[in-house]
Image 1 (cartoon, rainbow, N blue to C red):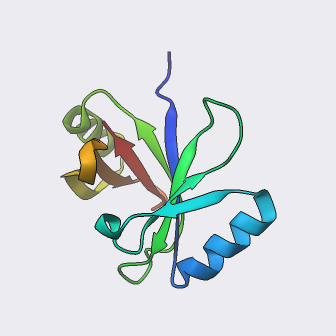
Image 2 (cartoon, rainbow, N blue to C red; image 1 turned 90 degrees about the horizontal axis):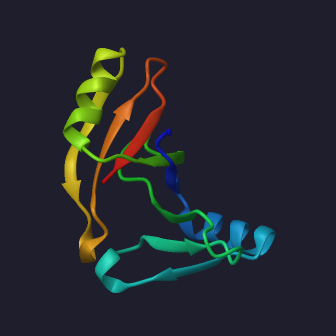
Length: 118
């Protein structure tokens, strides 16, 4: 069985504008918490097991875009495997706030950023 896509993320230089765009277009709700800074969690308002996401500001040049995060059992092993397959490590395992787990980022051989989430 393959590893599931666990969440998506939309990063923008104007995340508030994009938040309004996606909320109005798809009927999504976006919630924020001061502990998360300007980052908001997306609820797609669809079926119970629907994929959730987040929307937030770009933190560096080239950071904007849509990213997927794949659920993995072992971040270290997944990072090593990605490198063996020609990928590049972008972000080392980093704990998320409020017990949301830990994430890391890799670039595939074409340079597309892909999140890993455990």
